[in-house]
Amino acid sequence: MSILIGIITFISTVLIYLASRKLYQKVPNPFLLPVLPSTAFLVAILLIFHIPYETYMVGGKWIDWFLGPGVVALAYPLYKNWEILKRYSVSILIGVFVGAVIGVSTGLLLAKWVSFDEAIIYSIIPKNSTTPIAMEVATTLGGVSSMAAVFVMIAGIGGAILGPFVLKWSGIHHFLGRGIGFGSASHAIGTSKAMENSEQEGAISTVAMTVSAIMVSIVSPILVYFLY
Image (cartoon, rainbow, N blue to C red; front, side):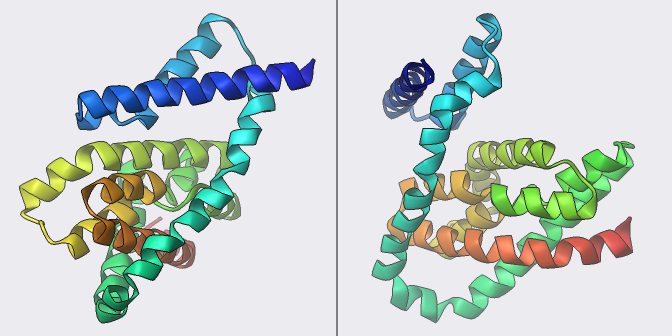
């Protein structure tokens, strides 16, 4: 029975995502990025039909298994743009470091300013890192890992939607700045958006996402010590 439930949830999720992707291809609006309507639709289905999260994850975990190969596939544009990455390595490291510090400190200070609970503040801090690292950092600081995963999702979707407007408003058109911005602020979801713009921007964003995850795990406890 569990296998049948898994097959149904797996196929349903894939079909919903493909439909969302087709919609985005016809109407390329940032608010219609496939991950946003597909996630909203799935949540609505779970709520309307009172389907427990654990039941959905019988098949959802199969999709989760594909994240590993998906991340490995990002190495291909890195290989193709290796010379560019070497040429801009110092700029990438400096840009990602600044992005990590700003991402952690702004999240911490804003959450503190609105008087969020301590556990929520610690869960928000690593929001611009990738999910596994954010969950680990949040747990280490005293936050809640599941809440950290939600904030990572919000940061990723928010960055992918608002990123193009912010970059355009800031006058940042170079693929280096755009790639660092997407990778540092909104990790894998932002990187998928960067890939749409150009392979070079996607490669820079992939590196920024990876390096940012490391830097966030290092600067988070330091900034918590000085700012909280």
